[in-house]
Length: 332
Image (cartoon, rainbow, N blue to C red; front, top):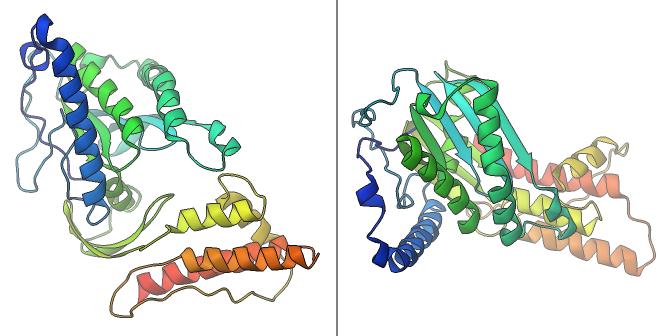
């Protein structure tokens, strides 16, 4: 994974202004970080490697040297990296050494199911509650002290601005306390190159299909840090389509697992031919809003007619339509 250049030193003098200037400086800093995260998210929808990193995080350009040990008294040769992910509705931390996960902890926020989707304010508050206990937990389980960390890698884009700031702020707090270098990580890039952990024999170049809750895109991957976007969704992501269809069918949020289970329970060989936009064959863009609308119209029509919904058949047809589209675009 392309990483940020953690060589630049941070100092208390650089991080904190004089007491009389703290309030205004804090407001300026907070606004700068928010703008950076928002701008990064917009650019990263076009290309996962583009965009400014959030304030306080350095990034590594392919070809540069590895992060330099710039903090006296802090162990740097054990290769232990603390990973922090707070981009949406899950708080996740991990300790990684030499591509091996030695400890991992994830907290999934269940409150959002009440609202049928992620509520950003709730997500941020839950991250604040869980980030410190989760980090302490993985450190305690592995008998790792903060000063033993070689690096902290924190998701800085794309994602919910408030949720991202929780992870970034915690990472910078550990940095200020223990002098551990901090790098900003684009979590879409993490999706792309994570396959090399499970498949070390995989060689570049390859085509990566990214299908997550809020993103659906195809990338040509020439190497670490070298990506070219081939196509992306022009409206709903595949995950959003699953969730919105699931809500129409009364499955709750998130709906992906429920749709998969209902589809597996379908005994009919029939399939509802829901339309899925193929778009221009010269590109690899996706579109799933038409599928969502078609399902909504069918459900409303059957309800108006007093007909009982065949949820397994609907789930199977929706799942096959989405998966067929993803496979067709990725393999052609």
